[in-house]
Image (cartoon, rainbow, N blue to C red):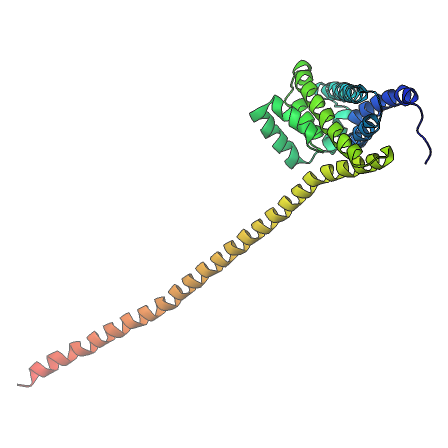
Length: 257
């Protein structure tokens, strides 16, 4: 197995690379920043310096915070402009109307705590950020809430990396395990939303079917009423015919003493 470079070289290259990748991932949401932080935590876990994990945590949180600030500032320019901006359009294109409505509802109820949770839930950051932009939340207020969110996010993915690094003796094995755990952690919310969406469609289909059968049952009842209506009419005419026949027979009996 080829040996890793010295720790000083790893730190000189690793920390700036970690900062740039995490900041870029905050601006361009397609970069898997969680897996990057977890991998860096694995490498730091196997180093002799006790401050390596602390540096990974601080660099990751600060880079994510700066990236969020830049993206929110660019989105604010689009909200204030009549023509919008491509950054705001990019944010809108990544959020469905249903998820935006949910984020707006939670933002109205919980405010800053939603920002913290949005960073921890995979694919939850952009809907909440767009909801904050449309609600015209001031940048200073967003900065305070997002600072706590970035600290919690960096701590969570660093713990995943420490877990992966503690399972295997070699750093590359821990990196593979950390990336796998991060992918699993990211896939669970999407799978849960898909299951909820499928069950909702099944429930709405069942309610629609019961409504149709109820309507057809009502039609059958009204049809029976219509059938009994003519029978009642003929019965009434028969009764009037009988009374008409008995009427003339009574006078003829009185004419013959």
